[in-house]
Each structure stands twice: as structure tokens, then as C-alpha cells.
Image (cartoon, rainbow, N blue to C red; front, side, top):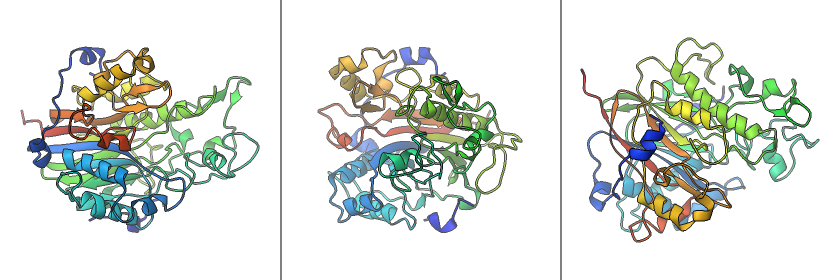
Length: 410
């Protein structure tokens, strides 16, 4: 059983939308101090990870780490009610979550007001957990550095690296949380099993394939008891579709990690889709949800199987809505025309700036279900002269937020 109760703290995708969506104005100081009625939901890849166990704890001790202060300031400025942090290292006792909550979020940063999240959820992930198999096919099992990561169930140099943390103003129904850390990749219907194009053989042979886990970190369904009813927070962080070879083992895995959510939304009796708690089947019909995370797949640009993210965005249960955007992303793309010259979509929708020739991409998503109304949205990516422009250097991703309200009854 992968879920340990003591590990948990209760405390139209369409191209027309790309062309015609309106600009969001930057968030004002007033909007950061008092949220509008409804539910503000956000996702943020914080880059608070270390190659060494306990490394982030040592880095943040004393409350003076500048990058963590900047991350906290962004959160304090936007003030989400419900927030997923990606790349936040897991530790069994939650000491790192305590430290960040108390010494960073709990203290006003750069003129912002402190913020408190009484409820948190975290659990184990696959990153850095050795599989005991030669997954990179170098003739060895495990080893030091990248060799360890390559042969782990999810790439990581130590167990729990690149973990996830859910922060909520509202209670979490812990008894109903579903995690899919252990779900075998081979169980998914029509799984994209990678093949070595040089030999025509499966990259993972028949002794390895049945034992591989689909999720590179984990997939969680976290029910949140909001004032307007339960919202299922569906969070994950699929592997980047790069850092592999012509066999495309990361690209195919990323696509199927996204496809898992599509199957989950289909709902019904799915005997193969069993969580770590032994419960099988998809999300209940009529349940309201929000999908969130660094999904590592731009619908148009960059690497990856773009059909996988587009099919998720266009799922019948996902609300058709204007994509979050920022003026800062437009300015960033204009400042690096060479890296973005081949990109086809409006750069306003991008959520991060990445190294090398990659340029800006839209990788971070907050996707609400039908039954919600979208009141406002944005990407926290200020222009160089705006408040917070120096904070965003703490991560190559930017916080994405949506303001949601219940759809009025007919």
C-alpha cells in the first residue's frame, strides 16, 4: 500500500482561442490582498529540489534563502485558495513543508502579506526510487549520479526529488484521496510502449515492461471540501518528453501520463485503473474537478506528443475557456526571437522560459471541469518594470492561476 496516513498532513483547446483571447492586465496590489468570491486555483513549479537527501531543508533553514523568499512572495501576491507545488522535495515527516510554511509563507516577503494554508497533502513519489532493472540499457543496474536516476521508476538522484505538495485553505478529505504511484504502465489500454527503431524491438523487453510504473512522480486525486462543495484536485507532474533517444521512451511516457487523466475523466468501470488503495475505476460522473500541474507538454510548440495534451484540454468534461496569459511572456519571447522563431502559438500563453534553443513554452496548466465559470486568470510573469519581476528568477516556470465560480443552476 503506497499511501501512508502519517505521510499526509491534514492540517476549445482551439487555435481560434489562441488568435482571439484578450489580454489580462497585471495583478494589482489590491487584488493580491483580497481574492474575489469563488475559488482561486493555481499551480507552480518551484524548483525547490536537491540532488542530495535533505538538501532543500539545509538550503532553506533559517528562513533566509532568497529563491525560497521569491517563491513565497509570488504565492503571497497571487494568494491562491488551492495550490499545487511541483518540484518540492518530499520528506517523510513533512518537515520541509513545515519550514516553508512557517519561515517563508508565514512571513511577509518583499512587502507582501504572510499567507497561511491550514491543510496540506503530500505523499511518496517514484522519482529516485531504484527499480532494480536496467531501464537505460547500459548493461548495469543503478550506479551513481545519472545512472541512478535512469534506472529509477522516475528519474531522480535521490528518493523524493521533484516531489509534489498540495496547499489548501479548505479541508482535505484524506480518506478519499486516491494515488496512482504504482499503476503499471502496461495496464493502460493501447499504451505507447517504446520501441528501438534501430532493431525494431521493444525498448523494454517482456521481463521489464510489466514491472514499469506509469507515473514518473505520482498522480493524485485530492478531494477538497470547499464552501461550494467538493472539488477533486487532480495533480501530477509527467516526465519531460526529452532526455532520451530515438526510442522516445520519455516522450511516450509523458503522453501516457496525460492519457491517464483522460481515462480517469471518462469514468465508469475501468478494472485496469486501480489506485494504490485498491479502488478501481474513474472519476464519478458529475464530480467537479480541477486538473493542475507542470504537464511538460505544450499543445503546439516544443517536443512531445502534442495530441496527448490537446485531447486532455478538449475532453468533454473540461471547461472550454480562454487560456491564462501574461504580458511578461510576450516581452520575454520578443527579447529572444531566435529561440522562439519556430513557435506557432501566441507567446502570451507561455508559462516558462527554458534553456538552450527551447525558448518559451506553455507547460503549466490549470484545467477546470464543466460546472464552473471562469471569472479571471493569469500567469504571474510581470514585465521588467512591474512588481515581482525579480522574483520570477527563482524558477524557470511561472505560477498559473484561475478564478472559478459555480455555474448558476438552470
